[in-house]
Length: 510
Ligand code: GDP
View 1 (cartoon, rainbow, N blue to C red):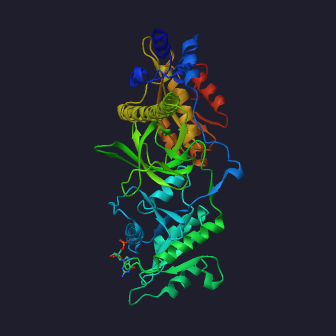
View 2: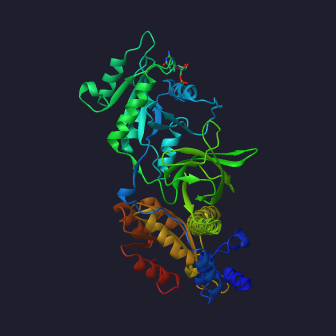
View 3: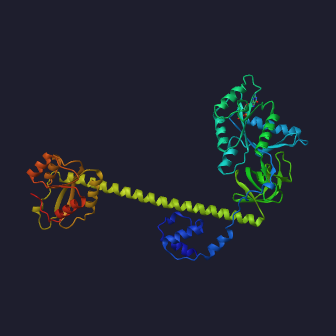
């Protein structure tokens, strides 16, 4: 009932004008608004519609070990800029093209498969830089099994080499070192390995378990050896996955193709992806129409550790998003709707707390301004009064005539700014009563001085001091000229006495 909601809105302390009513009608938000305004509200429609969409999809529990089958390792190449990552990836890819019968055109889809003559496979991720690795890990999806650390033999360990080592260690992913550019005249692979030793990367020849392969990415030397080393490490790691059941995977690249529409590369981690599968990723879904490999060849299916281009997405999901297969298109729509409403709700919550924060800030700045203003007003008043009265002493209380108001000049002294301000604030709230008009001619911190007394004398005023003493000279001067000098240590007593004096109960001591 929109009228009710609007009424509720209008009744709340929220900044209603800044909200777009069409965008804020989420249940949570309405509840919040209504609760705040103390209104009664029936939720029937809202809650049933929510129940219908309250169904997300999640990863399946770990598979029964007996259903697990070995899978190829997924490898990320990392290293310092210009040490040869791109060249290495290109050469590895080309090594496959040569062995391929129909020389398809290799295209960048974010990953490619290298197969050894013995049949073993390795999936290489070729997302540039550390992006694949870190952005996906940031989303909680770990896709990399092994890191190949490329270090140029003529340059040695550099900044990004160290960063890569840290990434791998933090993610608990084992490394293989590719000592690159070994074809170069000044290549010094031993130096590279010694330098790595200093950073806790212990190669086999130093008694560690990190394999180091001397390669030339440019010339293609030892790339087979590098792939074999990777396969060997993968065997030790016993990488396995379940090739059956609902598909689980990760989006490793996403783009929009003019002809095909949204196209993504999916890395399958569980199950076998086939045409006709219904997938959900983030807030979008797909009915898989076509699958392509990195050579642009249509494939029928892709099992664990395989990367394939998927065509059939409604919208392009983001890289790093988790892919989950669901039973039907209807289910996919339901999940996507649910996720979108969840996100909207989160947005509402954020918006709401932003509003609250803004209100608090407003209030704070308002209080501050007011404090400054009242302070200022006193100061201004003081200056104005001082100049106005400098040359004509205030009318003494005893000289009060019928229609003239009694006037009282005041000097306030205190130990700290805070106490002086507190007294001034109390006086500020003192409604100049009929009997007496109040003029604070001076205020400040520190002990009551001779000049304070002289000033009070000039204006026939009184001195009120809080938590401070008066100098001996000041006391004597005050006594001599009959200037009221009142020293207090309790604010309310000071104020009480002041009020008494103002209301004429207390006769000035003169
Ligand atoms: P990235 O920044 O790590 O991707 O490095 P690149 O692959 O772009 O390589 C940087 C430069 O080093 C390029 O000019 C490559 O041709 C060159 N390069 C890469 N690998 C080798 C190699 O094994 N030997 C030689 N001599 N040059 C190489």
